[in-house]
Amino acid sequence: MKQHENYPLVPVVRGKGAWLYDADGNRYLDAISSWWVNLFGHANPVINAAIRDQLEKIEHVMLAGFTHEPVVMLSERLKRIAPGSLGHCFYASDGASAIEIALKMSFHYWLLNGRPQKNGFISLQNDYHGETLGALSVTDVAIFRETYAPLLRPCTHVPTPDWRYAEAGESAEAYALRAAAALEHYLAEHHAQTAALILEPLVQGAAGMGMYHPVYLQRAREICDRYQVHLIADEIAVGFGRTGTLFACNQANIAPDFLCLSKGLSGGYLPLSVVMTTDKVFQAFYDDKTARAFLHSHSHTGNALACRAALAALDMIEQDQVITTNTRKTAYLNRIAAPLAAHPKVRNFRNCGMIWAFEVETDDPDFAANCFQAGLKQQLVLRPLGKTIYFMPPYIINEQEMDLLVDGTLHVLNTL
Image (cartoon, rainbow, N blue to C red; front, side):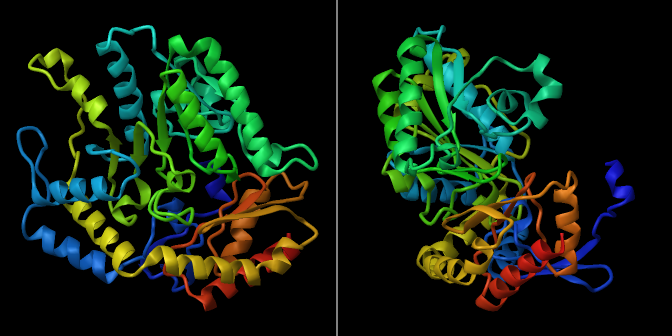
């Protein structure tokens, strides 16, 4: 907070498309989709119209003894497009809440099946899953964990498949398989006490956009099945086309036991999250006894306005053939970014769908803050993760805006 004495907050008064406008009339290209949530640009006319229409019907009603059309339609829609047989939806308001739900539901499932000792969780080294206590327990990013460590449950973090950790000459696939072998070694010994493995599929966001080969997901699914451990896929940041397929799990042709979605779910407009799970998990809780039910609720669960925004976003993904269009945009940005990848300060330039990242070789201890300020002068919102600069733009970004993004970033690198 104190740093804002030197780096004042930017007072945003409106947005349009990929751009944010401040109170002085300056505009900034939102290259990070306002923390990875915005899929179709600010003030999108399709989503705006859907929300206005819903406002005239019902803005919110509790999902306890009641329901409403948008949440029913969204649940049916998600069931059709999700990987595997994830036919049941449990809604909340944000990503961390979705993680809490998945963790509790996994443990509760094993408890109801007479295996209360299966109450431990494992996650990947460098994973980030949120900052509420349960989510933070399975997070492995020190700056978020250390202060609250006395409050957190123990969690084992198995080696990350992030290819930046590979040995010289070792391929991304080979390293992912080596990391999967470490996972199997751990579960062979500890599966009886482990409820679930939770991971960020393909891209580990907050740790610096670490990317890994899909074969790890395939092996993780096989290993979890072998040892009767749930697989929780945290696609909060990468779902809805961000990695180049509708869901990151699609690239490994696997389905998790729990799928956590948020951020882009509502097109980035309104707080909304969902945990999807299987008939097998659902049936464990389906009983006349209230004590066997999953007793968890949020005041704004399944908010009608947010669900209506989500339906509009899904319409655009399908009708505008966003996955195909994004493939062309990815190819264009990769082509024009060749000078960026070859820059002498740049290390590990990488891409997965509509996500780009690279490390910057610098001794500046304030690099992230200085890069942010330098980016603003180039009309760019760049918010590095440590020394990692990343792009995660809205899907509506055009070629002219991509040119500006690359040219402006090159100018920032040459300035700092």
